[in-house]
Each structure stands twice: as C-alpha cells, then as structure tokens.
Length: 162
Picture 1 (cartoon, helix red, strand yellow):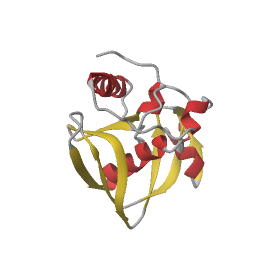
Picture 2 (tube, one colour):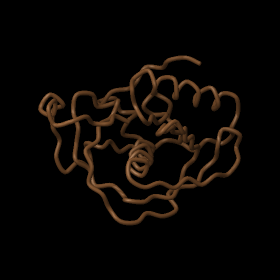
Picture 3 (tube, rainbow, N blue to C red):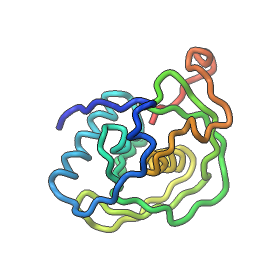
Picture 4 (cartoon, helix red, strand yellow):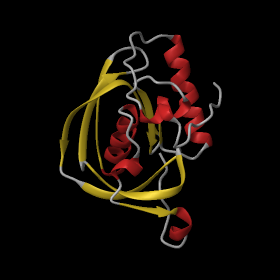
C-alpha cells in the first residue's frame, strides 16, 4: 500500500466525470488499498479515485469499522432527504450544509469483480452520495446551501471530512 496525494479544489480532474472500470484487476485492487490508506491517514471517512488523481469510477467509505468499496457504482434508489454539514478532503478548511438522501441504495462491483449492493441511512447515506458525486465531477461546495470556514465552527462541534 502507498499513500497518495489528495487532489485539491481547483484541479480540473475533480470536475470531470470518471470513466468506467473495464476490468477489475490487481491495479484496481492496489488503487483501493492505497485509497483506504490515504483516507485513514487524512482522517476521512470516504475517498473517490478522482481525489487521488485517477479518473475512474471507484470509491471507498469507512464507517463504524466497516469498509465499503464500490467500483462502477450506480444509484438504484433514494428516499427522503436530510440536511447535513459535511466537509471534503479535497476542499480543506470549509464545511457546507448539503441536502442528501436520507436513504440510498447502490449497486456496483467489489474488489473481486462480483456484483454487490450497498444501502445506507444517516451518515452512510451521506458518505455514499458524497463519494458518488465525486465520480460525476461534483464537489459538495457545488451543492451546498451554505458554506462556512472551518475556523467559524471551532466551537460548534466536529465535522466529518470525506
């Protein structure tokens, strides 16, 4: 495994739609491993391949000691809405209030190329939706109802960066 550099807002790769993975191979598995290590090192809960400079439809999320790895994810169903404050490893120093699905169901491939389904509510729904947006070239600041400098929130509690 290796740490990768996180691409920051302003880099055009973050505004492009990621390309489908045509073959799940050792290179893709290495990318997943590197993304997990990079996400953990930067205290994130999710990371999409474009955030490490790879324009492929791959992301990882880790919540409550469970790792979700999705290759070529598709949203199958969403229900309801929730408005949450979120941050992003590619947009350091700010958080935004974003409307996300209250429930999301996705399908995709796992690290072995097998079809899987993932569904989540609350923070998992937020993280899955956030990372999916990265694959579409959308940053949370593009959808935010309000954006704040993280220094303004020091006493308001913690935020989760993805």
